[in-house]
Image 1 (cartoon, rainbow, N blue to C red):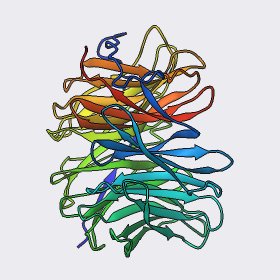
Image 2: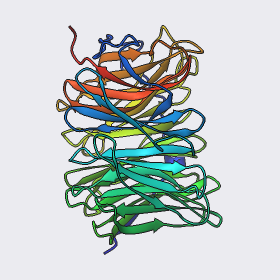
Image 3: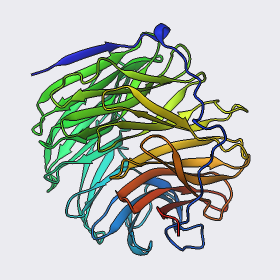
Image 4: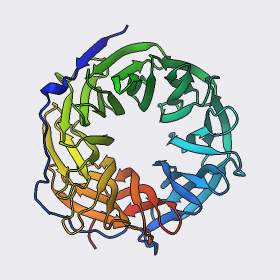
Length: 450
């Protein structure tokens, strides 16, 4: 049964909000590093460029999947102990880096096996999906190839039976379709589904519910800056359940993230062309495909904004992080946090600004702990050439409580791109440091003052 919803976003009806911090110039206290590495508490991954995926591993560890680079690009994988940052195991794909490979997504199953989706840069230029055990042995590899040109994976999720679902682009004449492919835990192909319209079709957000129904969020039919945001659900067996779309006649709305909590489905993204900038968007449905809110919620800024992460707290309140462009007193970009109540009303929004260092900042990942405290992770420039890795903790009511900064003892661009909240005392982030060479790195925050 298909249930189709169409929501219209009317650009001319939007009120533009110039957001300001709750307390002008307020910067939270800086908390200490959780690990004792000399590089500002950062476990760096040698000969890597940046973090491409970060997920929980087995037995008190995490997996960090980085883009490695020597003479060619490859996947550099590290399993790191949470307690002290010790490197437990590392390996690469290919085992001997040669042909170019770019890792795009990763996830782990309940047994601690790691799945990686990568883009190949030579030969057929297709997806490759790999399954490794906890010591790096490759259990299987599978490919997806449109047969028409380069294909790229973007999203991945593991269901409750260890099956892996991957979404990405599939080239066709005149554009790209979105392909969603499911493989069994043993590597057998279960099903393949397409979202196809003229122009660019792209899915980046994937999630599953308790019944292993699949939810895919993205955009459909983008041509010349005009397109449709789409959320589609299939059963575990691949039967389409329902579709919800959103259109903006003056721009291209796109869902980038989807999260399922209980019987609720949350999506977040942005819409361009309102009338000439971008607005953050959020919406909530039930898992049966009914609207839980009357319409799409939006947060607009005078110079636009971009969504970079979505999390949902224990009360069912969604939190979206991203970048608000040109918002600072000197026109700098600022990291933004937007929290909505479970019913859809805006609870609060905060923008990070350090008045002593009026330079760009951005939040690129978000997580929440059991006390509904919010961890927004990204980067902040402290001069025209030097940035620090940055993470800020906000209370459920929006007060900035704590801040962590790390520069990896390098100069240049630094930013967290992923965050994992394993418990109230185990909060980790991963990203990149640049300067005297570029490295991926993993950081653990100490969540209490000594």
